[in-house]
Amino acid sequence: MRTAIYGGSFNPPHLGHVSAVNTVVSELAPDRLIIMPDCIAPHKAMAENTPSPEHRLEMCRLAFGDIPGVEISDLEIRRGGRSYTVDTLEQLSALYPKDEFYLVIGSDMLTSFTTGWYRFEDILGMCTLTVISREMDDMEVLGQNAAMLKALYDANVIILTNHRPVPLSSSEVRQAIHDGDTEGKLNKAVMEYINKNGLYR
Image (cartoon, rainbow, N blue to C red):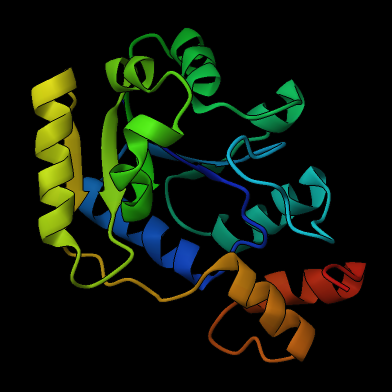
């Protein structure tokens, strides 16, 4: 089976994330796409008023649960501590030893892959990097980085060229929640959950 993994803090999961997932489903067509909210992000401090991992997990279920082939996993949350991707891939490889794994990342993550990822060479040996563009004009840079990773580490990299980025960041969405202006940023079910539970206040 072809298993794609899309991880992150999802703080909160917004329509940019949803757009990326829909692109992966349509272009890569994996047998399953695992959404993996982290417990503690290893590469950045969590924002003030970040909801609990359990709240972020539930928001992911609301944001992505209706997309065909998508599974929401609490593996990193149950493992606890900092959520290193290499540990997750090792766990998934043990669970699904016959699967081919595709790690979905944003274009900003590809350009910093060799400096910002723990045990990045082991990650490259376990999966194919599947890159979602975050800007309309970054294809040339992405191609150069993919070629470099192939030459130096024999990495497999796929760039999903038909994705049209939704220009949102989680920090912008959190500010929009504070300002009461989330139109076009969050789906209705996620916004209702945030209001019901008093998140990001």
